[in-house]
Image 1 (cartoon, helix red, strand yellow):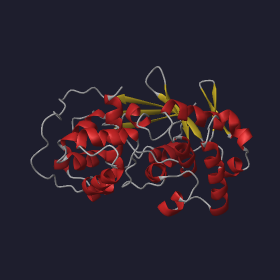
Image 2 (image 1 turned 135 degrees about the horizontal axis):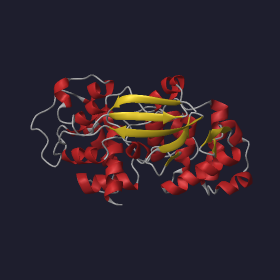
Image 3 (image 1 turned 120 degrees about the horizontal axis):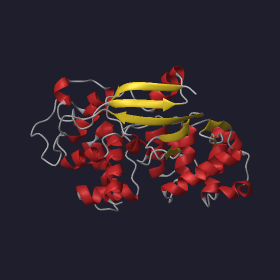
Image 4 (image 1 turned 30 degrees about the vertical axis):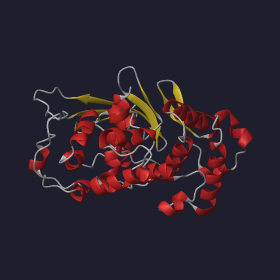
Length: 318
């Protein structure tokens, strides 16, 4: 079995990436690695941090009383400045990423873009935390988060299923859907994996056939959405996305962020409403004000901010 190793990976932690609510097909193993499937490939990933000898920055203190020479647009585009790295340079040591069942070609074509490894997350973190103590604490909690580049159809399916649902049940529904109706994607460690069925397959199914997946009222949403995609193609913008059956504002923002690369999207669910209320003082029911705050303070980095805050509040409430 092939194995690919990437050295000097920074701003990276598998627990943060795979447990921040953006994906549902990765399982943590006893050794701390993760096995999962994406883009039709099954791999196991393990991150091995280098030994850290220098101290961590004290993020409990006030951020520097100055504006770092980096705006949100620069951070998003990945421009770098050595002075900007100082605040977070010791937050996490670099390390080695080991991907089992992966060739060099697979890494370059699939896993490098999937893990967003070309983006400088250190720049993003410095931009978001320059004048924000709350965000500094959230970033420290989830410093290894990266936003995955996921398949759009799978993202649509996943977040339609996610409505009024919890993560373990979402994972179970997606696995059952794939096992019953998806295509074989390979085996790893003696377990067979299956891809999420495509829109043509889902559109051909009846509610009775989907009953074992236990989707409840989401069954109709999924079938109708599949039929719409078969007829009109995958959505290319927010308007087309919002026209899909069962896709409201929260689900649309999740799909925009995780499946369409709209990094200014700021999905709000019960966890995000809670964190925006507890940490920023916004009424828990005033989602409009939360979105306005995100646009004003996080701008093009709203999606990254959302992930740090989401992970932070969930970890604090465990």
